[in-house]
Length: 108
Image 1 (cartoon, rainbow, N blue to C red):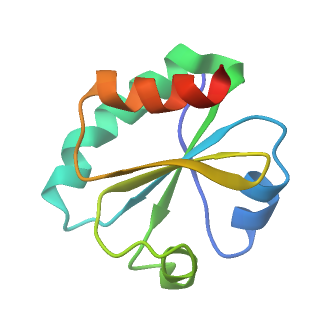
Image 2 (image 1 turned 90 degrees about the horizontal axis):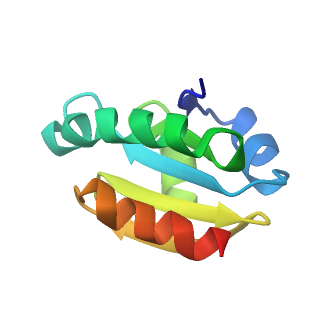
Image 3 (image 1 turned 120 degrees about the vertical axis):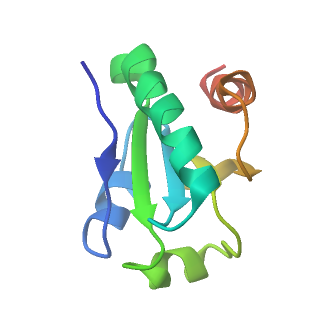
């Protein structure tokens, strides 16, 4: 059963830029209520997509360099990477269906 993984300054490039699979990165913070509302959805998606997609999280309070480098200015923001490049971006709390559409567009 796949789970979300936490990324930091050291692991971000390795896990995202060099991944052979698409990576969904959720930019969040502990104090962000909408971030907490989508967390269970992201856990479900990590399980549903299993080995096809990596679902990761970056706490913007702990690792602001990553968020700033990608122009993340509000949270939650989910960025879908493929081949180390940004392919899709969702800003705000979205439904599971909307998140899946973005992931599926990168997989197809």
